[in-house]
Image 1: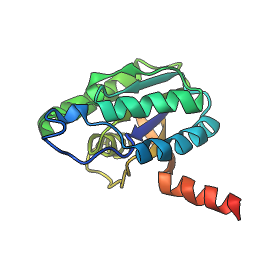
Image 2: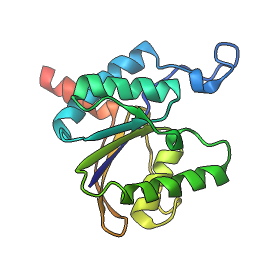
Image 3: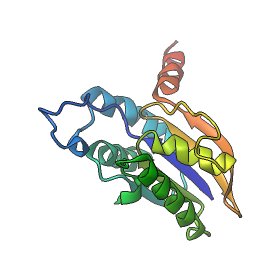
Image 4: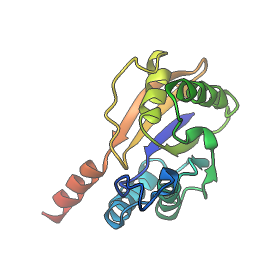
Length: 175
């Protein structure tokens, strides 16, 4: 199975006056536009995504909706375990729960999870090395990383695409 991890697109900066509840902080207009271009590419790179799940935080949910619209992937469903954890211990529990969830997804070709940092890079590190801090991953906002999960929960790194890379590809086509 291929697991595609997607960090939410660029959102507004934290602002307790505008969003007392940080989970309600939305994407910026430029973050939406930038990610829509990346989402179109993702639809071509990984067209067989069967399940799209996302954090219920507004910025991640909006990112997942753009993914569904632009890539042709299924409509998202909420997966609370992808939401930012209040403590490192809780994050670790959520990561292990996500790793176990992958066992129940055998027979599915591709799954995409949309969430937050640092949980996504720690989840990828856990799958790749067995430890959440086993490898450092610079997971940019609006980036996607693909892993192939094999029996026994071993992972192989497949690819990573960032909004900056998509912009460069687009600029090259214009020349």
